[in-house]
Image 1 (cartoon, one colour):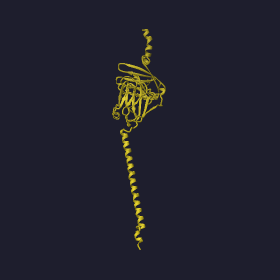
Image 2 (spheres, rainbow, N blue to C red):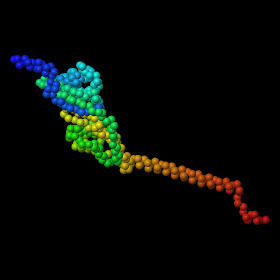
Image 3 (cartoon, rainbow, N blue to C red):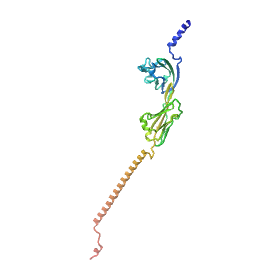
Image 4 (tube, helix red, strand yellow):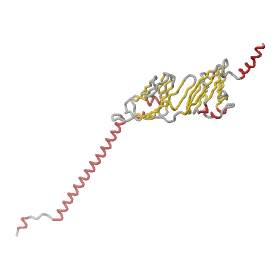
Length: 309
């Protein structure tokens, strides 16, 4: 009994300070300034009573199991003003996203999940190193109409990476693990008409029988992804500028050629008509001038009449 009495202060201390640091999962996360990072819970909110997020022991976000109460930024009790407008909670999973992360966001993020039968604790140790590059290269492609164009990421695809292709900011293809999906909406299906081919292993995108309407900007976004977090960085975005060159036998080019030929024909016809009018006018003037000369000088003399006495 005496020994139990001596252990009581230790038990009270542990209970009072929670389980953080005792049996918790610690997940290291390394990002750069300007990146977007999402911390995953791996659960569904409807199956939990509470999902709470802490930054350096200060609560910054919370969702209750029945979704009747959720908060971010300074709306939470003891919330931090520093995260204003940069936090987002997924209402279905309670996952926390921080946008435009900065050096001051480095530190420990504590996730507490409480359900009716159990509770768990996970710590994300976030380190922000330097700045993500704002400079980017844009590859330029100039294929001819009717050709096939392949856009290559130029790097090895990691198994867990998520790759998303955009055409003028419209999503046209996506690879999650080794599963590819092309043109999820009708607008994309109509525009490309089954002309997109996606390599699920390398992430390359091929456009078959390319035409002028395919000219524009293509972007590939590569997201670092695992079971605990995902990172979206500007440094892992590939950009392509595509300008499709018309060829003579294409419908668009044929129309242009027909138009040019028609214009030339009209010009030549106008020139011929103008030439005929000028020639006829000059001929008439010449005949009129000759007739006037004959009238002024009289009829030619008859030599026979002149010699008669």
